[in-house]
Amino acid sequence: MWKLRHYKKAIQKIGLLPQEKRDIYNRLLLFIKENPVIKTNSQRLIKQGHKNNTVGVAKLKIIVTKKYAMPVILALILILGGGTSALANQALPGDFLYPIKVNVNEGIRTTLTFSSQAQAQWDVERAQKRLEEAEQLAAQNRLNEQVQTELEARFQEASDSFEKNTQEVEAKNKTQAMLELRTSFEAALKAHEQVLSDIASENQQTKESIDALLAKVRARVDDAEHQQEEVQAHLETQSQTSLQILARNQQNTSGNKITEVEKFLAKLTLATSTQAQTTEKMTSAHAAYDQGTTQLENEQFAQAITSFQLAFRSAQEAQIIAAVNARIEIKLDSFERSHSESNENKNEEEHVSSTPEDIQHQEQEQEREQEMNENASSTQEQHDNDNEHGELNVSSSINVDVQLQNKEMELEHNGKGKIDSDL
Image (cartoon, rainbow, N blue to C red; front, side, top):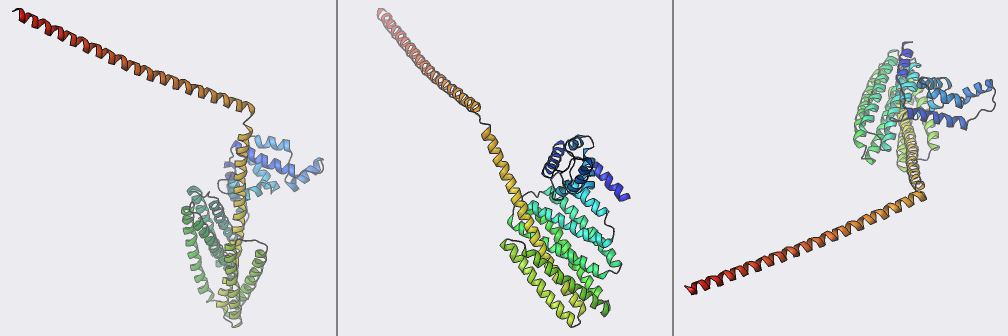
């Protein structure tokens, strides 16, 4: 009960901006329009509402705009399922539905997962979600330092929880379950390590953020390999009968996994590089499975278990690499298409805004600007003429003054000469 109260408090702290509320309303409204009810009587409406996640449009608008919009929306998510909850599951860090994804959807699943084994399986899935979110954002050049730090912390939390729950499974002597959990987690780590490395080598803009996350993943890979060594040492303490049973179970598990992945890959059209990686992994899976079968026939049970684990891990790595790359390509295409449509709409809006009145106004502005330029040119020309005229006047005045001074000196000289002759 305390967990439910904890998540109730967490839900109450989640708030949306007005624009985000309008976006949720518009998305739900679109879903309602695309999935109309067939009958209009109240009982049919209620049943159809639960089935198709629909509610009355008018009532929905009132609900979304009220003070307690967020709790009501979360109640709709929990009661009706699908709809907004499904949209939230596709959200990435930075999207307005992402808090609902990690705090509500995943929080509820964590609360309702009781056994240590189920919790550990869920931890593997959560860790993969965080890594895949980082991969999708990196492919879109949206993985900044803040988001990388958040994803790294969430990945670390899921990994720590996995280790705790797996140790509890091992303490209960559930060796088969423990082997499958550790093999699954190691496969997930190595597959995402490969995907992140590929993205980092192709995208220099987000390489720094990817490298920081890669360091955490590789540290976990090292831990997983060390744990496998401890598992191998633990197997050697088991009786031959127990080992034989475990080996045969691992043979069945790895064989089923290889078949499952082959069917999965047959449905996908992958890029050449991804196809090469998955082919290499599946080749390794078949080789390890054949080796394990031979070891099992020779009663080398501990070695056979290790080989079957490798077969399972290689097949699962191929599946994860293929699935992640396929989703990244879909997300990237959608992201690029969205940006292209946004730019087209922007250009179209700019074109539509150029009405005849706007064009006439622009022409008038251009005419006024041209007239001002002509006036400025005329004023500058007059100013230049005045300056030239002023220079001529000054020059004439200087010449007159010089002539007067020469005349005075001449008269002075003549007068002095006359006086001297008189003397």
